[in-house]
Length: 194
Image (cartoon, rainbow, N blue to C red):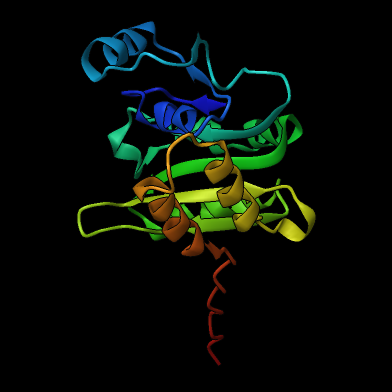
């Protein structure tokens, strides 16, 4: 499941890899714009609130804009990384969740990772940021010891694709190999004055 359609690039990319994708978009006008202006024509789109979805899924990918530029985090909206929604998401997925996180404040980013970690066995971060970009991909994994099966994922994507091993798999492989397990940063202890 993908929550947030935008222009449809993510959903289209996943569907092009022969993955079964259901996209949830709260705003029907966004669906119309994706189809008319961005050429999105594939896949199943459900117009609904991604916060209230039910039903088991293998994974949920959140690529949702908050529309609140003043909060320090432009995606995802606060409600998606709140304890109530993370608990619901953890109960719905068999593998894990993937968040596109855009937080300019490093402490806020760390807090989001900590929240995800409180509901999943492992948290991985793909930080492929370039100079003009602040997005990071955060993956919450349910599996044994919170590990990611990168090789299995790449094999599935390659096996399911009708394309030859092309640029997309090389880029995906490079990004996945760059993923690092997230560990909380140690908080500095304040020295007591004598």
